[in-house]
Length: 353
Length: 183
Image (cartoon, rainbow over all chains, first blue to last red; front, side):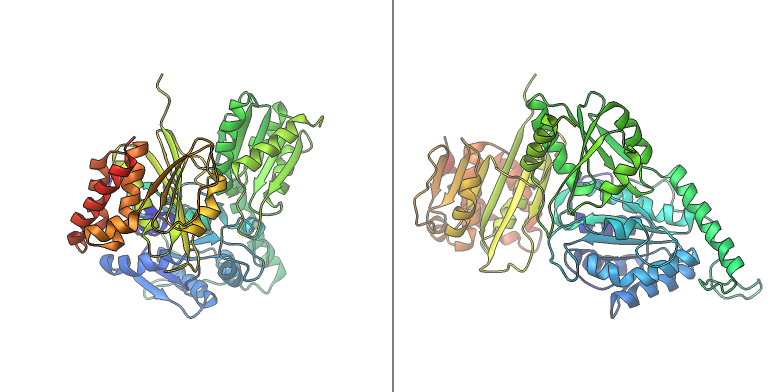
């Protein structure tokens, strides 16, 4: 394409999937992400893709499991309550080491909650929302452009690690319109997949499973998964730092909250308060090292989230007591305003520590 | 050094008045002028008759928050929208309001108010649905956020082939609105 067009975050995510070569979608509608399946239901027939609205989120994720096992480039999307329903399947797919992309356009919870934007699924996304010792790779875009870019990359990362990759956005990111440009991909080649179940004629049987009854065998499997997560931690940490060089106070926020924080930082700097931002883009693996470095120079941090304090735990692990970590959050679909963030930072700056 | 351009607007009315549409038109036109833009809707079960609003940011620089506490400008099409957003308008800001439907007086003294009888004008032109374009015309003429040419280009894009026959009436409504916004 190479031309900027205006799209909602949901549409851009869907189009990015098409351009990344994804041809299988299984899902069930839920606000505020229904435009993803809506878009793909129109777009996939044009490119020979398979769009299927399943009877539930549970069915959707197991269809993803099946398609991934057969080697397809496959995705699903949902919003918080629907993603909860998928957790069992995500655990199975992680255990079976299959690549897929899962999009969570978060809304307020718990339970059915509401339909307005939220970031309250951070724990669920980053700590392994289902049972067992596993992780999905989690990427959190903050603009429509970044959502499209990360979505394309998500499929490659899923293949690279044979692991689910989650795009974690919120209702505003899904609904908002911004210019987006789809970057030409140098290649849509995928790594060799000799593990797929495509019929064993003329070759040894492939087995895709998550059941290991012998504890010593399961332990080896767990350790192999662990080595894989260590590789992700080594290679895939992504973070944006903004005006942290001369900062006296640093805000830590991801996704939509980080954008709002940037405006707050501009206002603060006009008031001669030198504020900066650390924006984790990969939430698992989390950029602990960046925070460790920041905490060597800055003694006050403010974590801003659209929840009541989830990422702050990872921030504290990174900071490791070297700086005071404060928190400001709004919940239930309420979004923190830059004025509120400015007021919080002003309060913190006045504090002795 | 020239100060970089920055403008943010909240547009509000009831569902069916075309508030979301003129918000989109504004960002289409502004993008064509090379600006960064964001458009964020109030989303939810608000259809015809309910309240609807969207927030638009237009800037030379990368846009931080697409959510605005106190906007520089306000376009309101009905009473509930005026009640909801008048207190939030920035000091010295511009309020463009639909005087056909807004029956109460504006309370704020420290803002510029442009009253536009948008429904009457749209009816005179021959399509009462074009009241939104009258409002947009008044706003654009007053603030010069974007050129008339780019708005009309955007209109062509947004209407597409299917609704091409609506171009002339929308253009006329926009031009009529501009007369009210001229400084």
